[in-house]
Length: 405
Ligand SMILES: [Zn+2]
Image (tube, rainbow, N blue to C red; front, side):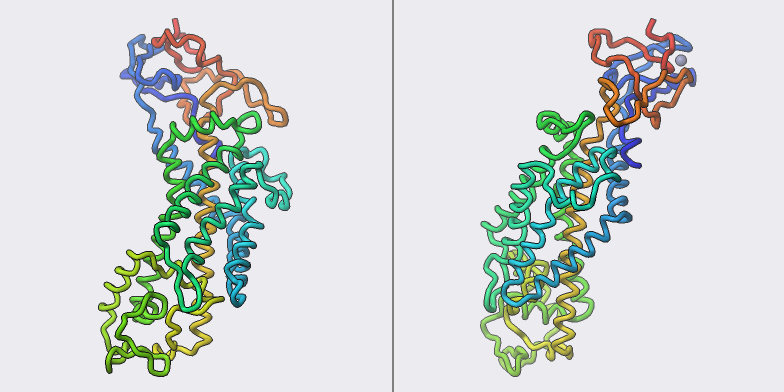
């Protein structure tokens, strides 16, 4: 699994004589003595970003290939059906998501502690991982749904993400994940202390940033994708008219918009692109407007016969789009939880084991004597790394090499 080879305790250093030395991570930036030719060799910074990146991308693939995806599909199906219930759809969807949100913190805990994983009963996923997670989880759901789908939504009103909504959604996507992470992640000996978790956020700022950014970035990508799809299909004009504020000079004849005497179908789609972009800037979006349209009315209630589409097909299309929007978002949150859990594992193997953990086989053994390439080795039984920081020139050759002198 990805976590097993997350970060090695050693930095491999190649000497000019061709031997590979292993330096402790604390020795980065100093020099160590080659145990073979006795030359001093500088210890370079390990290519950490690459390894962190690999850990995270493996984690994302695990989510996409693993059982999490079936939960995401089932969850988005249930939420989409809930959204379809007339008038109360948004509330129902919110309730369903709050029921399932404990899985978010649980996933962080399971990922941060692989020993927990397989044995855990599925219903444990419904129990919040911590008191803070139990409070922040529902707030995260409400802080996502209300600004995106409910704010300003109503009779002939599409939801609009205004400044208030933007502030709330920013809090929900920033503070809630961090708060749940800080209180749910497991460390080597059970619960990771908040101070330790905070330290990790500062040591791996890019990983934390990626985890926090995946949800908003995912929605931006989805919005762009849906708009492009509609544009290519020639239906962006229809969607723009149906969901975004209509121009003042528009008249409806039989549910089909006429501008003066011009049927909207005769206006080239390009003209709607700028209108769509303009409305995006004001906080309207397809991602925001389509899901609530299942239970409320669309803003303009334009007849889909205007694009030669039966009403049922139009409704089905909106259900399908909603399923995609909900599924995409749940997937982003699932990957976010996985990444936050993995960040808690990044430094495992960095600090020496304080002792065998109950229930986990003790992997410590005598250090291998060969000039190991250290990278993939799981290291235990290492002498305390912080014993003498004032001796940076201590060489640590092949495991027990004589370089230390
Ligand atoms: Zn050498």
